[in-house]
Each structure stands twice: as C-alpha cells, then as structure tokens.
Amino acid sequence: MTSADHQTVGAVGFAAWAAAEAFDDSYRDPEVIAKVRHEFTVFPRETKGEIFVAELDAEIVGWGAREGEPNYVSDLWVHPTHQAKGVGGALLLHLCELMVAEGLTTARIDTHARNLGAIRLYKRCGFTIIWHGIEFSRSMGVPLEKVHLEKQLG
Picture 1 (cartoon, helix red, strand yellow):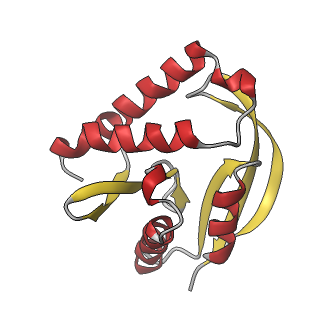
Picture 2 (cartoon, helix red, strand yellow):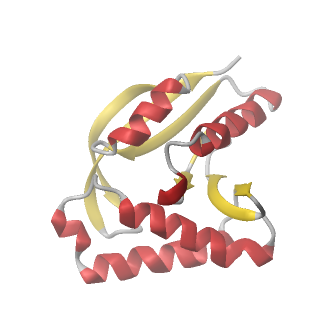
C-alpha cells in the first residue's frame, strides 16, 4: 500500500463493514457509524503495522493488515461487490505465507461471532475457533460478541 492508497483503503474497509449483517441494530447508531468511519479513515495512515491490498484492474478491492502481534491478522476487508470471489482468501493466505516465511508457527484472526461468511472463509483457510465471548470494541465503542480463530502454520 502506498500513501496515495490511504483514502481508498479506508473507503473499502468502511463499505465492507457497513454491508455486514452481523451487527445488532444498536450498533447502527449514527454515532457508532461516525466513529467507525473515522477509524477506517485514519487507520491506513496511522497504523504501525503492515497493510496489503488486493487489486483488480488497478482498483483496490480488498485489504488485509497485520498490526499488533506478528502472527495476528488485525483486519481483512473486501468491498461488498467483490466478496465471495476469492479476494479475502487470497489476502489471508498471503498473510499466512508471510508469517511462515518469518518462522511463525500460528496465525490468529478475530471477527464478530455472527459474521458467518467470514467464519466460513477462515475455516476454509484452515483456521479453527479457539474462543467465543464478549469483547469491547474500541473502534465502535460498544461490546461485541466475538470469536478468535487460530491456524497452525508450517
């Protein structure tokens, strides 16, 4: 990702988040939406991690990020018009390949517990659910029902 991509990356992430059907209506509060939009706007510019983009015909259609622990995929977002076409899987497998090359033995990712499409994708890519519970979302400012998934690398 280049600095010229920051705005597009944020817009793709927000579009994917806004299209998700996993959230309760209470999470669709205008204040929550504004907070999340802001987080997507600043994340590409402020992240201390790595962001990798997926392009189709020179257009960014998805992205994945590693921020925090080296084996943690902090973000995986695909624009709604490009979901279920292999973009998310390709990004996730690329991130896992990088981790293998770095000598890491496990990869981790989290998502909303009702984000069934993402969970199916992660399971197809070899991840298994290792935890299910409630976590406070800093970006949304609300508690969320989450799952943590892990994959053995090697």
